Every structure is written in C-alpha cells, then in structure tokens.
Length: 237
Image 1: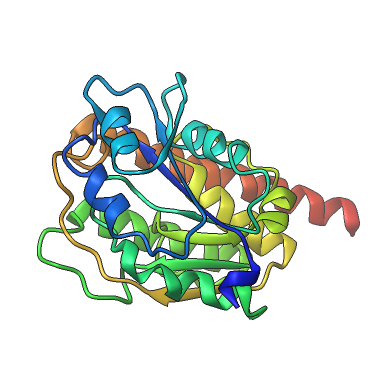
Image 2 (image 1 turned 90 degrees about the vertical axis):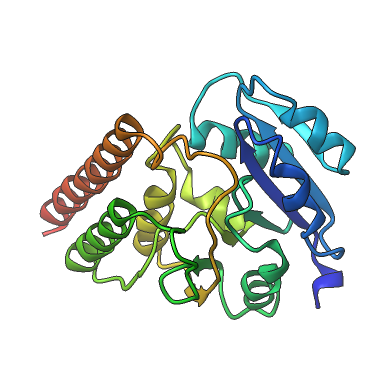
C-alpha cells in the first residue's frame, strides 16, 4: 500500500557531516522525498546531505522544533511524514514499522519506542532514561495515555499533523506532539525500534547545559498543557 501514499522524511541536523550520509543511505528506497534541515551547521552537513541525495532546507533559528517545522513546510504534498535524527542513532531501515500502520489505516501517529526495542550499551544516558520515564509517567497520570518514550523516530499522517498546530520551537517539540495527539484522540501506536550510540557528541545529552535545558523545557511543556487542560475542564463543568 505504500505506493499509494507519498512518504516524506524530515531530518533536523546540526553539525552532522560525519553521520548524515549514512542516515540517508539507510532510508528505504520507497521513500519519495528526504529533507535534511540544516539548523545552522558550521561543518559540511548540508553539502554532504546533498551529495548523498537529499534535499536541503536551511533554518537559521536554532531549535529542534524550528527545524522540524521547516522540514514540514518543505513537504506540502506528503501523505505521511517521518521524523528521525541525523546522528545515526536511529535505524532508518526500520522505517516500515512506523509507516505501514499509517498507510494501512491502523494508526494516525506512530512513535518508535527505544525503550521497547534493543538498546545498545551507551545509546541512552541515565539522564535520558530518567527524563523519558518521568515525562511518560506524568502524561499517563494527567491524560491517561500510555507512552514509554519520547523517541525522535516517529511518523504521522500529514492531515493529523496539521490538526496538532505544533508551536514549540525547541526541546518541547516531541512531548507537545504526544500530548496534543492524546487530546485530539488520534489513533496512536508505539512500536519497538532499535537504538545505538550516536556518531559524535550530542548537543543535548552530551552537555550538562543541554541536559538541564531540555529537561526543564519538557517538564514545563507538560505543566503548561496540564494547566490548560484543567482550565478547560473547569469551563466545561
């Protein structure tokens, strides 16, 4: 059924010249378009991505969410959009696990759960494991949804994505997507994906500052939506 759907891939990338060609090479041939979003790299990320066969969009505003939105804007005709990182920690060759439930009508939104898959040693830091567990636990307590991960490897129907009206421009992007999907009642599925240590040093978990900022933003995003949700319930009652 994939041949009946236009599949687009968005890869936010910042200084990933060592990894990006390997990511692109492992993306299945049935994908229609690959957009690498250069988020202000100081190396040859964009050039290497073009040489590897991807389209390149440039987003000058630093931030994961900003880069993802730039990629979405570059894929107006896609039926399904897949997001994955440019550091080769995800396994692009597992993309069918995420896309097939969408094109078959089983799901609107599919998250690749690293927790449910096979994690190579060192692939997730202790602070990432704790942050994932805490965020997922809070979402379950507040919204009654069962997630196990905030994994970046995910796929969503384009029309469903538009309904989410995504707004976050940095670290809160993934958790915002999951909360809004739950609030709108999207058919959501988690599938196990494998995960390996990234090539190079992470801009988030690889630094104390990045870890603190990401954790704070994720928790503040959950708190903001929780307050909004409670306020809405009070208005209805």
